[in-house]
Image (cartoon, rainbow, N blue to C red; front, side, top):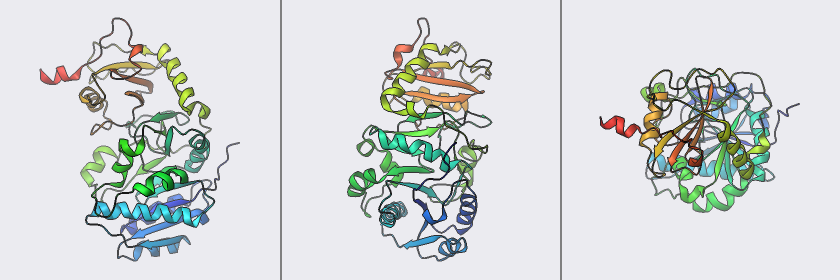
Length: 358
């Protein structure tokens, strides 16, 4: 039986959007395994309404008045203060869950976190557990029990360890004079240090907020409104023990050995480039990627597949795993990826830069 309750504090980061906060908290408190005593709503600014919303639900709230030269700096300081306070309030907690006021959680969110935290605790090559998959594709059912390791820091519902925050993040957190977005700072190579995050095949959070500092209705409709979000029953996650660094490499090796390459002569924007799933085989795609900064073909492929195409996200060593037409797909950037060895004889990597120039 899956354990649905975990003893991990939850920091809800709120600004001055009480209507969003009300929607978020109402859903959060209906989630299986939730413990209201572990939830703290952190509010920021000169507005009292968000704190009153927390009071309506009987939740603890703490108000900060962050300093900073810019709005991004003030938000960054708000996160710093909120994370510090979370660990102070719960001195025995080894982890904290971070949620924003404009994020809904799936019914099995806490179960998902409970099943993945032991791996985060065990493996120093991991950075966080995130409930968000940047590469979710509209109308894909996905595999709710499947997990991936990815570079970067997806955010939008994540758990990090006390050790990471207190020993590494807090001493180096950008000052109020810096213009850093806190999440971009956490994704930076100097901070992440090559570590990865665990993500689900199907997101356990949904970003419903269409207004904010870095959000508007047009952008939200284009990239978030139709993002897949798990709404099914609690599931037992698959092969969680295989997410440690060495075991995951062995898993990928086996997948690459049996993957069936697509017809690389077809243009990736054609509807049948990735065939509709008829077997359990993983299908593979090899793209031109001369080095880790050569993202042109990958981003062009993303536009064809209608997934996140603004920057490179969701990869593991220039290898991506995703679902297309209910197929499990693995994409390898050649020769940048260490997995380029799997390129079959006679298959030429797709180069969409050539197509763009014609």
